[in-house]
Length: 560
Image (cartoon, rainbow, N blue to C red; front, side):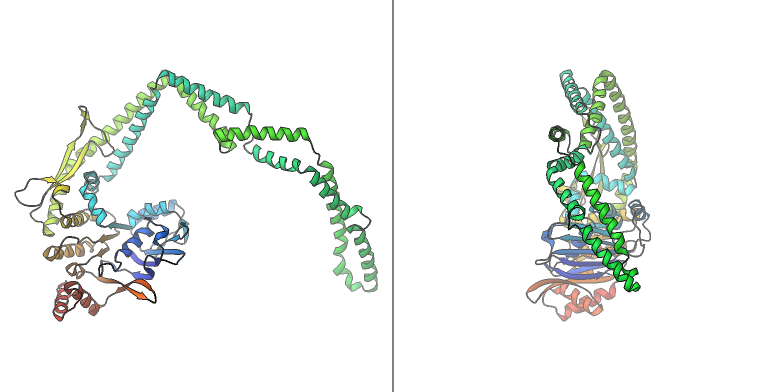
């Protein structure tokens, strides 16, 4: 359940802190007030689209935080455990930040995470449905997933997809292996040349180029290094006025001082040790200067070797380690190409096995879909009757696809699933896209979520403008269904209809106002009197009459 949403510097929002309740939370406000900013913020914090353009003008960073309660979500716990994240079941905090430079940062329980991980979590936390989501119902490609979710066979459908991908990969590998003999020989020659070229370089140390660069730098500066080391040695030890000579004078005076006043001896005694440290440093510098030798021959060797390694890195790199790995890859490919007919036969066997696995799973999925279809039709028509679409007839079309006289294999199985609808008595069943209006699509989406949600895990369901294109008695039915759905799931509904808003257990209103010289969006939870006024506005428009208030009061009173 979503408990809290904090929004900072996003679009017209300067700062928002919104608390949500169990059950049905309704969000209302005048057109253009920014109602969708709440849904957009929730989508963003769970891995949705983000860009610097979303940041409030004049600010450098936007931030959205969401707090969930997840006591019944083993899937979330398992995912977090896999990623090494500690979880608080009652205060599961997610934060996402975007900067004007385009950088994204994600935190889960104040631990750094990624947008990809948010996308993995999202299906277990929130299910957002807006106008764009409703339009997906018009595409029959999405119908199989809806049917599978209802029947609890989406796991089997995922296995079918994986089996198809494995079969398709085996098919492509076999096609590649069956290339013409000339192409095969060309590949053999090219791979053999790569191996010979890299092996001739005799690379035994992947860090050789780095080490040679360091040695080249030293050799190129040999004269300067000797001069510096020698001058340091002379200053410390060799010169008449060297540091050691001057230090010896100081030590004699310190000894005279401590003879007169022994109390100072302990304080100054470390000076004697300094002489040995300086002597060691001086001798080390002298030895270093003697070791440094300028060798034109060695310098030429290094430069030639680096030229060779750089050439190989450009061809097979970018690193020497990549160059070395190229040999292993080339040898494997040479072995496959050299195996010739034997390798091709092994691929044919692998393709046949992969095809058998896919076909077995796909046939099982088809049978399960046929068994589920009738229950799906009955359940969906029952929900549509409740939503004032009692004349609507739904049928699940399952068509076995063929190509060139053979069953056509695909990632979703052997069948094309399409929802056929007849919205009025006496009309024939037709494609959903050809007969459904915007209001009917909205109610179909709500009906689908109602019949599939009980089979799923608890999460927050968000309906953005699900009431588009409806009103009157139909809106009343939608509101009742949202309220019933909220008995099992937390629901957040953005609406502009009083007939729906009246059913909210919690009512939030959105408005925008000018503060100083800036426009800002605000969200506030309404009390009972404020709800009456807001419902009256939704009923009567800008001019709120006493009659509208009485109607709004009756609406709230009649909700049970």
